[in-house]
Figure 1 (cartoon, rainbow, N blue to C red):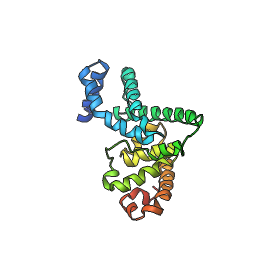
Figure 2: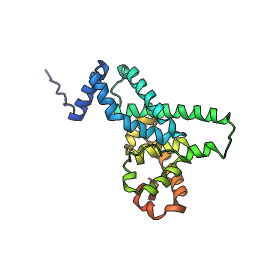
Figure 3: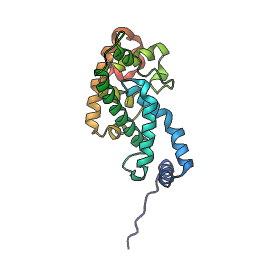
Figure 4: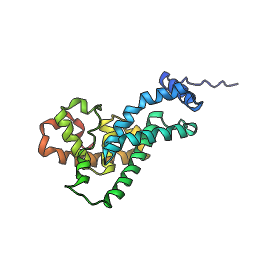
Length: 215
């Protein structure tokens, strides 16, 4: 008789599996942990994707409502982090569509409110991602303004990979696209961002190796 030997899960995976079981059982302590662990990352990600970053708090609330309602259906096809990020990206994208539809119906009174809102993207979050820790506050602001001028899909893939520090595989899971699509989108987004930033901050680009290559 052949005995099957099961490889034990790594400690981090066992811990996450236990957290998920506690969440699915309705544990208040587990939900408190979830909010303390993910509220700031979700806020930061939402504020960087949104056309109007002032909506980030509303998006965070909606994301956690969706998490609470759907945690019972969560399966281990991806990590809890990528699942929450996927919900955040989807919710922020829906909010952007709502914002665009309603903005088109409004008549500006002074200047261009749409441009003002786009320029303010990312400004609401004081928590720096991996890339931003390398940059001065002034340079961060230039990066944020350049990101706000990219398309939503380009901005999202750059934020996930270069600012949030997700792996290619994690970005693929969050966006629900294959690795080849992630890499091609990222290459185009990097090139577009570089063309936005090069005229004003060529020396600072040396601190961002990803923009020096077409990987």
